[in-house]
Image (tube, rainbow, N blue to C red):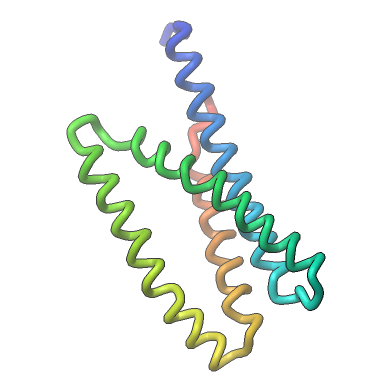
Amino acid sequence: MRMTPVVVFVSFLLLLLTWLLLSGLTLIALGLLVLPFSRTLPPLLVAVSALAIGMGAMQPSLNSLISRRAGAGEQGEVMGVAQSVGSLSRVLGPLLAGALFAGLGREFPFFCGTVLVAAAITETVLSAEFDT
């Protein structure tokens, strides 16, 4: 395929979005790891800042990548499903985390969250198209 300026630009944008997604997920994982050990204000600020910056980098990148993966005729449907899954996770996640907190201790929900984010990082790396 001939690399026209448009193809190069779109490839660069997709690569940038993927790296933003990975950076955001990494910051979220670090924040979740630090948070249960935060007994004083400085580590708590580091953990919460990492979570906030990570979510700020991850969510828009994820939405853009989902939108770009969907076909032109199905973008609305795919984005609707993605938003629905996100909403469902914001309802079920705290319920599950509360049960883990009560049953296994206050650190356990954060460690489970870290494992889930690590799985998301792995899936992103394995499914990314870096060969632009």
